[in-house]
Length: 201
Image: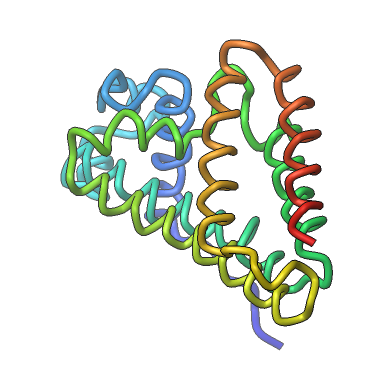
């Protein structure tokens, strides 16, 4: 038997900074969130912040690489590689992402999509980190669709890469529309995406 891993104080402090920073950035945006606000929210010292991160940018990149990336793999990539019904699996993932309030707040949209819009045009490091994340999502979708295609779950003429891109961009769009129209917009989207997915069979 292995003893459970106990997070060190330093690791716990780093995790606290990342989690609280994400909360602030999700609500206010990355550029509008200052290090002083993060420090005040976490109740850590400025020295503790700079012990873990040399800059606000390094902290922001850690949110993408250490928080977003593993969560995406767990929530999306893993379920897609262990399914016998690809269209139902994709629909269920989208439904959960849109309707599980413990994940995202409709008023603030998707934190990943928000950072893509805010930071990718102005910061190359953010663009590369976000590209890595979105490519992982696209590849997970495309790979699962190709596997489903070999199992005759979907038609042989389906362009799996194009479908993966369409699903990714559709989700991005509805999260942004939801900021304005509210959660009611999700119902129509899910109805139409269900029809679209069924047509892949």
